[in-house]
Each structure stands twice: as C-alpha cells, then as structure tokens.
Amino acid sequence: MDKTRLVSVDLGTSKVVSVFGVPDEGDIKVEGYSPKIPSEGIESGVIQNIEKIANSLYTAVNEAFKLKGDIPKKKTPLLVTISGNYVESETVRGFVPVKDPDGEIQENDRIRVIMTAMQRANTGEREIIYVHPNEYTVDDQKGIKEPVGMIGTKLEVESFLLKAKRNILNTLRKVVSKTNFGVENFIYSPIASSFAVLEEEEVNQGVILLDIGMGTIDTAIWNKGSLIYAGSFIGGGKYILNDLIRGLRISSKKARELLEIYGNISPELEDAGEVEVEGIGERPSKRIKISLISEIISARVEELFEKVKWHIERIIPLNKLAAGIVLVGGVSKLKGITRIAEEIFDAPCIIGKPKNFKGLSTDIISDPSYSAALGALRVGQVIRSEYLSDLYGIKRKNASGFFNLFKKIKNFIENF
Ligand SMILES: Nc1ncnc2c1ncn2[C@@H]1O[C@H](COP(=O)(O)OP(=O)(O)OP(=O)(O)O)[C@@H](O)[C@H]1O
Ligand SMILES: [Mg+2]
Image (cartoon, rainbow, N blue to C red):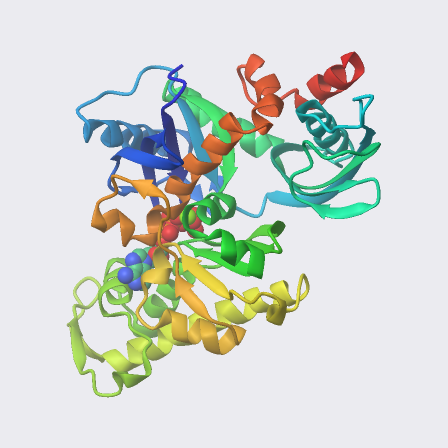
C-alpha cells in the first residue's frame, strides 16, 4: 500500500468523482481528479445495482489517475464517501484512571478512554465508521480539547460516533471489491465536506454545513469546536427537477438544463424573458417564462430549507450558531440560493470553498460538487496521522475494514 497517497471516491446519486493527493506541509496537494462520471445504480446513498455503480467507480478512479499519466494499482485503498439516512450518530462517554504514577496523561490514556467510550455504543446491526472525540474532562475540569500532558487521576471523554448499517456497508465493500480496489475507510459525506471547506473559527463559533446534492441534503452541525450532529435528509436537486418536469411538462434532460443553466432565484428576475423548450417526443416546442422557472425552483428550495430548519431547531437553536450556514453540493451552484437560505434560516449564508488544498484548478475550486471527495482526503489524513491512527491501526490488521473493531477493542483494553 502506498502509505502517503490518499485516494477518495464520492458515490453520489448523480455523479461519481475520484480525487487523489498527498499530504504537503499541513495541506493536501491534489495530484489528480476525475471529471464527473454519471452515477448509475445508487440512489440517496443506497445501492440499487452493484455492477453499474462498480463501473462508475472504476471509471472515476481510473480517470483521476489518467490525469497524472498514471494507472491505479490493484488493491488501491479508497476513502469511500457515503451518504444516506442509514447512517446514525450517537454521543458516548467513557472514563479511565490515568496510568502514570505522577498523573501525567499520556497518548495511551487518550486511546484507552476513546475505546472505552466506543465500547458503550449501541451498535446492533450497525458498524462504527467514525469517531470524533469532542471534549475531555480531567478530574473536575471540563471542556478540554487536548488532554495529553495534563495532570489528573481520571480522564473522561465525550465522543461523537457515526454508525452505518452493516448490510449496506457490506454491499459497498462488494462494489469496491468488484473493481479490484480496496476500502480504506468509509467517510460520511457531511464530515468529509466539513473538512474540505470549514474554517476552524466557523467550527468554534457554530456553523451548519449543508451539502445539497441530487438525492440527499447531508448536514453537519459544529459548535464550540465540537461536532454535535451529522445526518442526511432526503431532498435535493431531484425534487426540484421533478417539479420542473411535472409543472412544465418537459423531459428530465431539459429540466436539468433549465435548473443548471437558467436556474436563478434572485429577486431581480421579473423581466428575464422566455426560453424555448422543445416538447417531449413529437409535441411542439413552447416558450416558457424564466420567471416561472424561477418560481417553481424557489418554491421547492424554500420547502427543502424549511424541512431542514425544522430538524435543526430540534437539535440546537439556530441563533447559537454565529457563523450561520455554509452550502456545498451541486445545488449550491443555483444562483440566488444563499439569499433564500438567509431568509429562511435567518442566519448568514455562504458557499463553501475548499481550504488548504494545493494543486486545485479553478474549475474544481469553484465546483462545490467536489467538496465531499476533497474533504475525504483530509479525513483520511487525520485518521492516518493523528493519535486516532492507533485506533484505526487495529482495524488495519483486519484487511476488510471495521468488521471486528469491537472484538479488537475489547482485546486491546483487556490486554492493556
Ligand atoms: N448550476 C447549477 N444550478 C443548480 N443546480 C445544479 C447546478 N449544477 C448541478 N446542479 C444540481 O446539483 C445536483 C447534483 O449535485 P451533487 O453533484 O452534489 O450530487 P450528488 O453528490 O451526486 O448527490 P447526493 O450527494 O445527493 O447523493 C443535481 O440535482 C444537479 O441538477
Ligand atoms: Mg453528494
């Protein structure tokens, strides 16, 4: 396995993209990326056709390598970005006594306490795919982000875990094995996108990341430096497209063109004119007012945002998240979308741009559809390089992923 190269593949409802790069002085130097390969055989994160999605995946990874005049090796480990409402989160706590006689907290104490907390997770038919230690308590001192080196007798952690349905992950593993590549880790899309575009200050002030794709709105909420929520709501471009198809009686290809080229939900659109649209099959073409297209799109976007807002308000009051909303995903390219988001959420809203990447061409920087694939490289880097690599190192002895993590954690703790 190439230890430094990180390769990701984002399996979206509309497209599959692959990106690869290497860590470079705290940044990631992107060496290759694929164009958007039309995605077939996956719908809102759930596999519908193994062969088709395996083909899209294989093509995307090969295309990314081709850009560098390279060919991916067999068994290339992939950071596979997933989304969908089969991923659940849970906050778990655990504590351990500090081992050092002088009470100095060591790296091993941190690993033990995270593992102890993970053991308490209620997994059932789910596998843990990600663990994010949010904060530590040393004796009575709460809210510690970096406990190693501190002095105490007891170390506690509060960790945010993500768990995905095992049978869906197994199907995804099968898809990847058909391509002869391997799974390094599954990375949940809103976490990946967060790592691609969010600033540390936003994460501290409180921010909502919304990755609005074709079939899902992947959401992550960060506050005071902690990850407090990650989930996927059904929604996205598909629903806007369906409204255009039904409302204007046009083909799905034309609907996509209207959304992506003429889609504009800015208020100054009153006299924007008309667009000629050919009829379906033999039907005559017709002229459609651009303001009508805009009305249809904005009605659905408002509805989608209202739905997301309803869910978020049950997690945390929006006014506690000072940095507001950061949008990514294909639909965030819709002109005027930030204004609607600001109105509905009553919070500032911007379009996320990738941060701390080198070697990106401007078309990728300005395309928020790539944020999940890019961010997966960062998450992969964190998992490999920080103290968490010890946790995932246990996993690596097991070539097929996170399968027996719990058994291994148990052994690790018992033998410690
Ligand atoms: N310029 C644009 N304006 C508005 N919508 C756009 C634009 N470009 C792409 N879209 C829409 O974005 C959606 C695709 O976004 P994205 O590539 O993020 O989805 P995905 O990752 O494949 O899907 P998901 O994450 O939901 O599985 C499609 O519905 C597409 O019509
Ligand atoms: Mg997506």
